[in-house]
Amino acid sequence: MNLLPRGKSADYLVTGHWSERAVEEAQIVAASNGGTVRIAASTAETQFTRVPSQGELQLDAGAAFVHMTSNNTIYGSQWHTFPDTGTVPLVADMSSDFLWRKIDASRFAMIYAGAQKNVGPSGVTVVVMRKDLTDGGRKDIPKIFRYATHASQNSLYHTPPTFGIYLVRNVLEWIQSIGGLAQIEAWNREKGRLLYGAIDGAPDYWRCPVARESRSYMNVVFRLPNEALEEKFAKESTAAGLIGLKGHRSVGGMRASLYNAVTVDDVKKLVGFMDEFRANNRP
Amino acid sequence: MNLLPRGKSADYLVTGHWSERAVEEAQIVAASNGGTVRIAASTAETQFTRVPSQGELQLDAGAAFVHMTSNNTIYGSQWHTFPDTGTVPLVADMSSDFLWRKIDASRFAMIYAGAQKNVGPSGVTVVVMRKDLTDGGRKDIPKIFRYATHASQNSLYHTPPTFGIYLVRNVLEWIQSIGGLAQIEAWNREKGRLLYGAIDGAPDYWRCPVARESRSYMNVVFRLPNEALEEKFAKESTAAGLIGLKGHRSVGGMRASLYNAVTVDDVKKLVGFMDEFRANNRP
Image 1 (cartoon, chains in turn blue, red):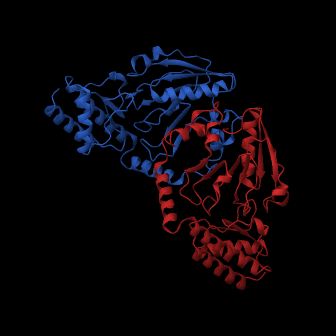
Image 2 (cartoon, rainbow over the protein chains, first blue to last red):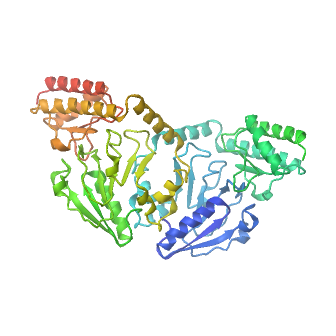
């Protein structure tokens, strides 16, 4: 609504559920505005088990912006090398992996992220945006929906969700207190190494459908030899205090979400449980 | 965005800051949609010191809806008899007086209210809406902005602000536990009786600019004999633990906000302070 001027086109990189939803919403905005939404890349044909490489992107040099989703919660894939969009502004939905590691924010014209994964409670959204994009946003949409409004009013144009922002402040202070994003990233990489290591270490039993170079450090999806064992694994892991390991209903299997609040020890506990389960439950 | 179909007109009742903002946003929506925004009544000429009577409303029988703001926080006025709009759907922003008393909700096609005054923390908005209005809403706006989306998905289409909703649940339970809205209303009427009684009881000193029949039970505005005394009153009341009595900067004077969380005893304390201040600070 802000970034697609009348008659212009925007490029979308489609890598899972949330980028598909973003395309649908953009199409509605474009339809009301004489604009166009182009799919510049999609990995739908391979069931979103990877993100596209730079060579696969069919970018429009005249696009108003390129939109991407940096991590795909349902499919367990993640961008590890961000796309090069030249002079076209790159806009990223980082809701599910914001602050999982240090990034070069200057690569992005806009980053937006719901706080509820790594930085605070649901109900707060962080927006990092280049000033020329806020200033250049559409003026024919309601004032409350213009990023320019919130930027010019120091995010106090509306009554802000104060308690949520207070919790985000506390999380950010905690991140600084433990050594900043360098420490967060070290833990996240260790968590991924442990869990993907366990999966890849027993390929007769566990299987991660995601291509190695696209595997997510936030959402690790994996399958067991059959659905009956997956059902049993979900039940017994829950009973063992390992909550929420059932995969999203649209894809099945298992999913371990390793957001910043999950510790290396938590993942060790999960890996220990997996080893034991595999020993006791042969297909 | 939802309720004004292409080419249709909507009626707005303008009684203060928030209804003026609502008109501005509606005009932007109408401009993009071939629609019209009519001001069916305004009390701007009398500095919003009252709400209009039924006879003053110049309603359009063909309007898509009539919009009103039930309480005006800055000017301290409130609708005590709701307008009769015939068959035209009545839409009310009740952000600042939702649940201050029992109302006949069937009079309204839609009620919306930010939770942050009477029912919970900022970041939650309550919407009560007639099903034909959600179903009949515009389909050419983003799905996330359609009331129909949220109605059909039991308010779980997006990730809801869970902690805020939990606090709203607790406030609603508390209201039930103390005797429901009947008790809340009794306390609010007593609070208003005490404070307006003190103001009207010393007209040589205090002055409420709002017409009696439009006075708000949520926001009581009053003036002192001069601005120097108002400044002193603000300072000394704060020092005495009576916080936030300075009026909004756009109108000056004093404002006591008596939302549901303020007790009858709190208001007695304020009235006691006012009596003492008046005795010690003659103009």
